[in-house]
Image (cartoon, rainbow, N blue to C red):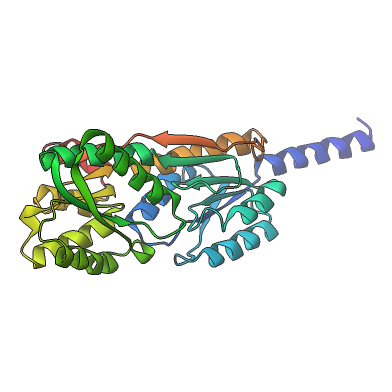
Length: 314
């Protein structure tokens, strides 16, 4: 073997080893860290990534601020991350940042809310169907007639808008005897603000038979307010997401139900999709429409919550 061939062979081996040892940098930007669903998504992703030596996952906390998410997206682009997992605070506000990231070859997958800008994929609860499911079951529980109210999501949160849309569709189609007497949004999806909103609903309505809070934190706040007013037994309070604290309240009879979604599975689905694209050197999808993967919700109620096993409670 000549000296030049020997050098070429060594260089070839070094290049192959370098390629095999490549580490993928993946950024995770939820709306905020510390929430049951955002934590569960991270756990689900780590169940896949922790089996690999080729992934570095970085979690950032934008504290429910769209402008911070935009800044973080820009930072990850500048640091040449390979992929970003994003739960947008505002679908419109994050669109430009998503477009920039994918134009630079960075794969973007969103959780629960897709941006207006098309991107590789979005893994989400089937939100309209979830809202319809809540409306259907609540309507049964209150006998198809009465007054109900909605604690809405913050402006710009499409998943909450869709859950409310599904709920209203169910009421309009199935229960003409049920009247929606109020709807008000809670800033930041917060339990404390939901308590205040629920108190105003209770003061304005001597008869209130049901409340749909479009996430579990707000449902728990509504239940606290109703219980303090001595009216919890009269009102069927529902949430959406299915966090374990809410499931426990259903078992205790303090909540009527929630639209449950397995967030561990959701996170694993995102991680598996990313690894398929990264290992396959496929990059962003760059399709005219976002690939939407919807996960069907389960109606967790007093008689069905037992079917959600401990390992699936997040």
